[in-house]
Image (cartoon, rainbow, N blue to C red):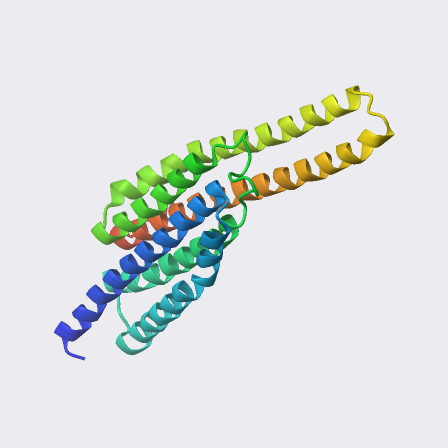
Length: 235
């Protein structure tokens, strides 16, 4: 293959990875909106649209494999191709998490009053978008900055999970301190079941948001390796 055509394919691969990142970002933003508002129709749209991300991933996987097999790239070109393969894998997993997140909204909208779900969700999405932008620009410093942000995000997720469990325990304590009659027992049981369901959805949502941020760090780590041959963020 002539050098010009080979370089064009490398450039197109990079552009296609960025386009996949934008597609995943759109799906993810819709998922956060669906969960924050309890919009079942939007949640279903996110879930049904996941096939588009999967098809994009498979096409890019084939391109990476072909470039490795036929062109046998070395040095910086090899890091570009292998890092791009890792990046699309993380983006595909963010899209999978988006399908989970879309369904966590309660019947009255929102996830749980103790969780700042929209804020956390938007911040995790911003980390992914910034990681893709760093990949596109080859910005090593941005990669390190994204990794540093993850520590704070993990702490916020920990506090959110603790707040959810604390509210559950306080509500259960309040119920036990009351003295309901027999007619109120069934209502208390139903309230407890609803509360447990809400808590379960909230804890799963926080867990998945933390994973989204982790995938952003993975994208940044592979980008740093691609740009500077530095594996300090890879773990």
